[in-house]
Image (cartoon, rainbow, N blue to C red; front, side, top):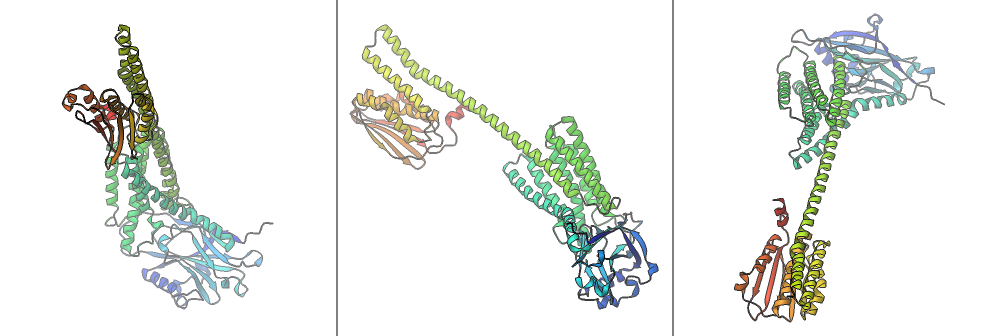
Length: 619
């Protein structure tokens, strides 16, 4: 069974007005501050009659709520403000005469000077709410007053009489919405929902945008050429300044307050300028002239609206008018560019900016008092729409860049595979193919016996295995590569009567060791062992590995006849081996002398900036 509503919306009130001086207003506020809320304030009862709600019934007249006075341009500078106290009298009687446990007053919007709420008691008017501390935020915060239970239903009251005391500038703008009176449990959800829509969304949006702005700025620091990330972070910073009134207590001095509101209002033009610059970064061409012209207009308007001059105009309306001009120019220009180019990111951003413009114009009309007093400000929601389009554009750019990188990587992989195939074909043509062709010609001419043919074929098989082994993944492990070579050449060395000593220690992984490099290493080691087997007349050979900090060393040593180094330096074999070592970024050294064996040493760097072979390929 649904519980009956114990609250009602009041769209009609009784209104009485009094012209006050600034001294009257100060006296009124001082009397409110002296109240402790425990009973009728003595200072309030001691006020002159014209500072209290009128007792004469003829002073009251009906007024429909919302009660709004639109903004009007001032006719000239005001030396002394003209004040007016507006008393709004409301009555509440509970349904069926049963008083709720707690009665509350809720008003969606109240744009006046510091308001107060009074409840009539047999002893006089008792203040239950004084908004002097939060008056500067009153324009955006709904009014919520919980009335003490001691004042509801006291002395068998038939109705609760409440007054909302709202001082205003006689020439200025004010807005008093409808009022809700009734059970607290009925009205509190309405108040919380209104507070969330009017304040909470703006605060959450501002903080979320600040975090996204910091993230975007960090990305821009890593990629300085991606200016959209910088512009996004600047938009976030500007929007945080624009919404400072949602996060900070406002300055207490008049001068500080004027400068505070100037900064928050003027920053809106800068935020919009940055938004348009961000959007145009997704256009096909630059639009520097438009951006410079609009930036100049924003700078001039910001200076014009400083709280140093123009005291005779409503600066707030002037600032908002300047903001509207910037918005109209920017949205129109970005929209035209989007229609002309048809780019998806730019088009979606242009639509979002147009939506933001429409919502911003609504807020401007609301600020001027020309639309419903109970509407909410929509710019926080416009921000969500615009930022959503920005994030979409950045996501599209990121995905596009990622796809481009992936495409380039695939093309590079294909080119490298093609280069690798060409390298293998050239290597096999120069090595295996050349040896087979020479052997075939020699056999045809009868100049090569069967034993020599077998030896050539064995070398060709070893060479083919070497090429195949170089293609196997070795995980940048040089020791594993050498172990594979030892296994492949073991039988051949044994058949040649050569004992191989294995003095191999662990080596660090060589990050640059790829298949082309592995083949160079294998060929150098194979050639060194083949020379030992063919020419050294050695009994033993020894493979040694050592790690010396920045480089590793592989040595092939034998106990053979040795040779004269001067004649070797003039030969083509050693020069060819040294070229292979240079391609690896290393160094090959051969030491030998007649009767003392030979030592071939290959030194390779542990790390190197770029593969010499790849560098040559790029050239």
